[in-house]
Amino acid sequence: MLSLENVNKVFHAGTANERIALENVSLHLPKGDFVTIVGGNGAGKTTLMNAVSGVFLADSGRVLLDGEDITFLPEYRRARYIGRLFQDPMRGTAPNMTIAENLALAYHSANRSRFRIGLGKRLLGLFRERLALLDLGLEDRLKTNMGLLSGGQRQAVTLLMATICTPKLLMLDEHTAALDPVTGEKVLRLTQEIIAQDRITTIMVTHNLESALQLGNRTVMMEQGKVALDISGAERDGMTVEELTRRFHL
Image (cartoon, rainbow, N blue to C red; front, side, top):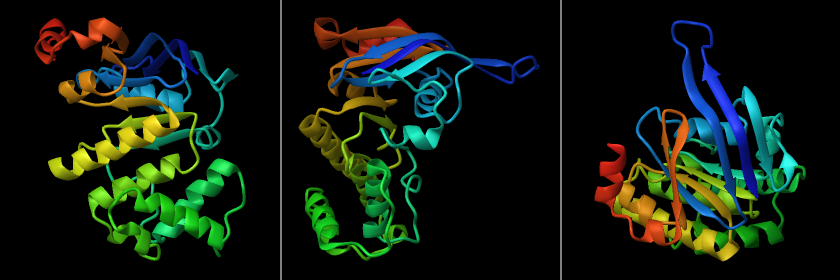
């Protein structure tokens, strides 16, 4: 499904501020994998996400998605296949547009169809149906501007936008870190349900080591731009947070 082959990225090359962000990173995710990624600040977690989503091009190496080489594909074209959520609930949505309009933008973008100001009954029905699953009462607030929602509500809608048409890959960049514990747990539960229902291949960056070992089926640790650990199965099931912390000094 997703393959990174010897991906390298250096920022400020040839200057006093040169920093190796990714060094020969190779990673393969079969379809349906749910991988949690951990590591200290500057380890390369978000840089890896940016390299996959096309925020910048890798200096060398290849990125393949579902068998297609997307190494040099621009970000807006990758967005048709990749859903992404950020830590900041304000990112990824248009605050002055309604919930329905934001969902319509995401829907038409994923389907490569033209966005229309007027929304038909079929689409509105689909949006209400999907919003009802969030259990936040938002199905009756389709005309509410996104900017008027709470952080948790907005992040839940953003999750729905990223998965309204099942993406080939879902990337979650600490998407519950800015929410209060109760709201964060709810958004995380919704995330798990949507991923499981549609078997979406997923990468989730988190600083919560307990969540990293409990969620998904595989955990990757990054350190100094490299993959320092890649565990799954019985090895992962038997690993404790204390052991993970002790081995890599997080």
